[in-house]
Length: 160
Image (cartoon, rainbow, N blue to C red; front, side, top):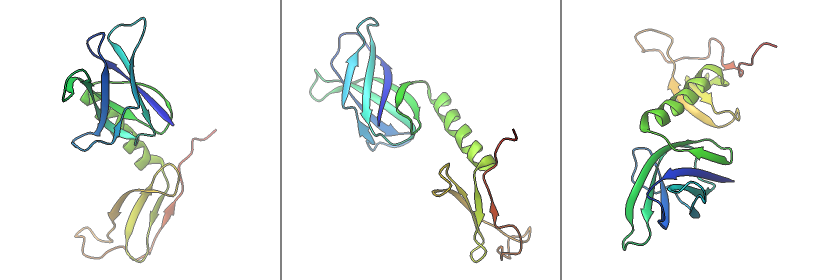
């Protein structure tokens, strides 16, 4: 699945682009291609094949320099859907990531293991663990949950 990210840089450059998870200096993906739009000079489209979802920093490099010189940077929040994504600022990207997380906590299926007392919020596929937390029976957090209550909450669905 291909994700295309819009980037702004000086017109007429030959660019390379790399994607980094926010707050990391490890490359998550390199762009297969970066092309300048014909009728919007300075607007580039960077194509990434199957990049990881989440919040990322995209850095564009001028390939004419050796080593390549960073000429543009922008933040992006990618989901699992192919398409064109507009880059933005850090606050917008982090907000988008937090909204998705808050929605998952509020809506997604939740399971509490009666043996360990660990509650797990599952991702949208109802199978992949997204968040975990130890549950306790008392406010002092001395007695871990022992399976004396609800252990599964199905995904919340809108009422028609």
